[in-house]
Each structure stands twice: as C-alpha cells, then as structure tokens.
Amino acid sequence: MSMAAGEYVSVSSQADVEAADLSIERHALATNHDSELDELTPIYIERGLTAELANQVQLLETGDISPIIPEKDQSGAVSFKIIKMITRTEDHVANYDSDYIKIKELALRNKQTESIKKWQTDKLKDTYIKIGDEFKECVFISDWIQ
Image (cartoon, rainbow, N blue to C red):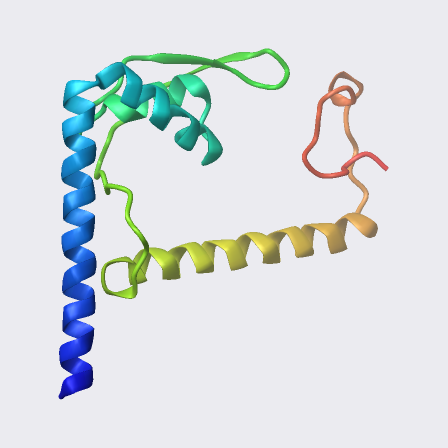
C-alpha cells in the first residue's frame, strides 16, 4: 500500500510541476511573444524542421491550417507545403502512462526503417539498376550508381 501511495504522490507531483511549467510558458508567450518565439524556433529546428516551418508550427493551434509555405530542397527546386495541426502536445517529459503508444509507434517505425535500409544495402550489392544519363548528376540518398 505504501509503495502505491508513493507512486501516486510521485505521478501527481510530476503532473503538478508540468502544469505549473505549462502555465508559466503560456503566460510568457502571451506577455513576451516575440522573445518566446525566438526561444522556441531553435528547438523545432533541432527536431528537423526548417526555420520557416518552425515559425509556422509554433503559431498553429489544434485545427489550424498554415498559409502556403515555399521551401527549397537541396537541388534548389521549390516545393510548397501546407501544415494542418491535427493535435498539439505540449512539451513534457515522456512517461509510459500518456506516451506509451507514441513510443511504441516510434520504436516500430525505427525498426522498419532500419530493416528497409539493411535490405536495400544487401540488394544493391547484386542488383543492376540503370540510371539514365539525365539523372546521373542527381543526389541520391543511397549509392545507386556503382
């Protein structure tokens, strides 16, 4: 019984701390908007978004749709993106109670990606792939040209 009570207090305390932190961040965003956005942008960029996408994502609320965002790829070709914020989860320390399914999905997706990379690497060794002359200057993620 005492272990269960201790766990309850621990989880409850963590939730209280996260709620307080979230309240502080919301207040800071409301009162010092530009400074807070400057603080958040590098976090989104670190997670793999471009600066333009990071700026758009931080302004969206659940259900919002972004304006059209032009973006250049590595070759300089322009593409356009539109973001719809389906759900928004505030930053928090991951825990099994609320994040188990997400953690499981990420682990599975990572395992699938690694399996595909291994299969592709193995198959590239003994598979002939003809690349047309007009595509030989393209940048490939995998070593297709041998």
